[in-house]
Length: 318
Image (cartoon, rainbow, N blue to C red):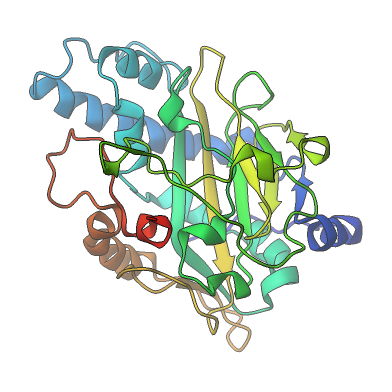
């Protein structure tokens, strides 16, 4: 698989990440590089719409709408559509190519070293307008992993596919919030003794220093790098368009990945001892796909049930 070309990250950006837990690198990927992935998103939505139509869940497939409008229309007709798209976890070639691109690997090498793996907790974010279940509250990424996993350096690359701002659900971070080097207390909401229809963990607002919060407005194709312990959240999408984004994680292959249950091992993307090495995406994703429904907690439900009861919730179930 061909890699997208390399790009330099500045010493100031590396320092900002180390000291503040985040940094933004602008205009890393062009729309020419993002469009093949948007085409894959369209394929995923089209497949979902066809199945929902055949199952009688919807009466209009909205196939006249583009990738930024169609899922919003489907969500209005059948609530939970955006959650179901998010939880499909379908990795297609163009997105795999971006994840393992020279551009990203050259930058994350500054934090994880010359040997790099892709962490199998990754996401396509299909953030439809005015959909509470797609608005991620304050959290640290390490809270979703085993106790102790926060000691593994696991930078995340968050990449939007359209310009993002306060109105359409951009990210917010707490600079320096990773400094205690520990996982803060997280909660999960429940209703009638069972996990709420949100699968998110959250840090209470009282534990977030509001005066320090930074809003990360970005251009499409820019990259927000996040330390695994920096508190962050997304704002509600108040626009009329789907805010598509991905978050991709990296680590050194020798370090503990921190899973609760049996996801596949991280995929090796770069080996210092073998400069010609290329990731074996076909073999890795076959194993990933087999374990994915168990990790998401969706293996015993019908394909249109959007509730989630994942194993990562057990750590905070008290």
